[in-house]
Image (cartoon, rainbow, N blue to C red):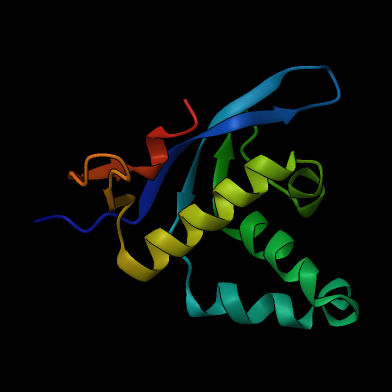
Length: 121
């Protein structure tokens, strides 16, 4: 049995770079204790706690399209839907170590698993 530490994802909207290229596919690794502690030293986070998610995601997203160095500036320029998606994915993989969640259909009551990494694409 292998231990998965990196998870592929597809953003619902996509990051648009300066050249107009849309980047939707990426990967996120599991966070370490240092990933969660280090941003607390950042002055932007100290002055605005809401900025914590920006610096944290920039640390754990290993690739976004052809971009291999994801910076806080890139995360700042994501659409709100993409930021919400990445926050949910972060919580799921770091709390449960997987991207699938069990859901119940509100109409028929059937239960099934949904892979959050597939929702954007």
